[in-house]
Length: 150
Image 1 (tube, one colour):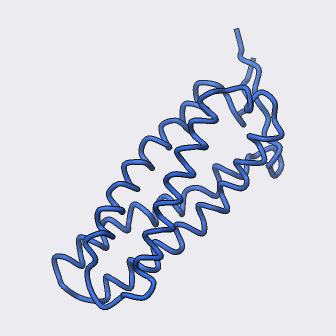
Image 2 (cartoon, rainbow, N blue to C red):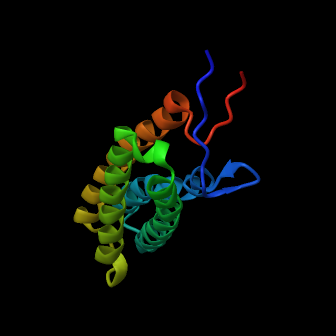
């Protein structure tokens, strides 16, 4: 028995925009952990500047992807009725709030390593993992934004 697909309102030629936009912010925010560890290991301020950019671009890109996801959450009834969609959205907002805060911590201090930045980067990476699993469950378990062949 084929499952009825849940079509995204934010799509281009039938391809949902949210999954297209989320890859770079996730890569930037996960790469931020590596930049923080490199800053500890080398004590080179270069890695602090890299961390600033990764945190900023990851946050900005994540909020843009979140807007695309929000349109689907609000305007697609089948998505709105999924509890997992609301949990995914809540976890994403928590993750992006932490990432944005992390960027603000780094904004005026790129001279060296910030221990709080590393802690927040690690927590953000953990939240990204959980949020990504929930998003994957929506796609593969509930066929959100996927055309399912009969």
